[in-house]
Length: 485
Image (cartoon, rainbow, N blue to C red; front, side):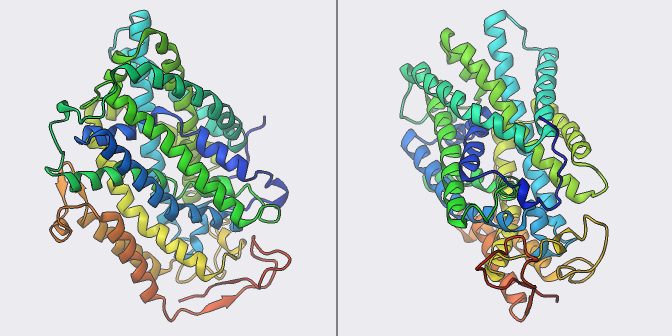
């Protein structure tokens, strides 16, 4: 299979041969990995019992999916990735906000997936073959996982899609075996080793779990969904089918692995660490399946994240090819893996990362969705590529390529979110107004969205001739896009 040559340029309709079923496959198969499973461990580590953990994860995932899934329709219409598409609201240069947010999200999740996958692999190899769990072993395993991940990411979307289809079946079988492996010691009670509720009382801790373990999953895809739907043709597949496929893929792809992580956390008594107890509590017959899950699953998920990182860096540095950008971000992600292994506490690092990125990413997603509704899903695909061609002008040029009002709205929402976040090592000053409950994503999204609506209330729409927008087809209304400031 040849290496994908497309970066963030517009995908011709003839190459847009994927469909909603492929979208479900890639969202399910790529997420059945330890990098997603470990998020199910967070609620038990916060001191919650089984039913409280499950309710927090389900509630957060469903709410996040309802909010996130419509973003898939943006790239269905623009035929490019979401950060580039956001140029319609932020300007062709201002879309760098989305590229940076997407780069940070994918970087963190790539590093986390390789990190946890490598730790479990070293543990399993130690039990099977007596491999000492020293620095050399971790270095070799991390490097092998990173190299395999780079290979898949460089080859691109088609290889990752084929890999996801295989993983959707294979990893599901491995998880089913895992239920039998850890069931004998499963308990529904809170783990005493967790030391009680992390935030001191039930509801603040439950809300933290709902955001950190549930909502963070769909929000991680706010810039990634377009990487897949840009290969789906709106001529052959309706927006409703694509939206339903996104809902199904996100719900299954997140709830199945995360609830498995919650189940195994109680079955392995994993209160303060996940990888070590998971390996120690595994029966001998499940060690090989666990090794396959840690290796193949990690490569599938991290490869998809690394692919997205390459696209985001390609969007930031148009002169770089997608392959070269992917190699560059792979080096950075691998460095983060080593730093995470030696310098970070897993629970604290994961919680802080997802809450901070959720706070700054949510207002960007809200503004992008507002723009999608305003232009009725029709964009000037050629004007979105102005920055990539290193040229000027077009209806999304605004002022020097930036829509100052949209960018300021995002910055305001992100700032409020950071002031309202509750981290293990930091408590935002606005928490006193929310009773100590982390509402950072709600506040950041609401403030960013309201500010954008208020600042652009008098902004007029400018018509675009039929045929220019990527989503324009027979029977559609004339395309309209937001005008200049």
